Length: 167
Image 1: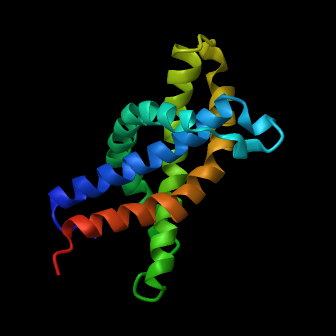
Image 2: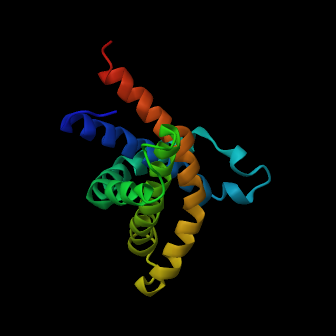
């Protein structure tokens, strides 16, 4: 885990972009209607990965900013209400912190995405923003939680260890 401010920033950037890329792959596939076809998301093509990389290039910046402003702190705070590091398994404490952080960041990033993709770029009325936001959270939360726990966090820890573990 990060020990210096520099390491915290690097860890945060890796995690932010890992989350942004995974969520953009998911959302681009849905935007292209793959979830409605027979076979569902199994119909993905390589083109989705390149489109997602473009969107993740700027969405990762938003993730990094908002996770540092409030997402990480609120996630840690909520996790501390449900875990005791002195008594609970450290892995359980880590999973709870991840889940609580996703619980903060998913609604935050769903609002960013709703404003950017649905109101600004798609031209929907800002009056529809609350409904669009709720629908976006409902669509993204299960994927964000699973992606964080089973892909983004393990990937981030592995890359971080490769960069900074000099044993």
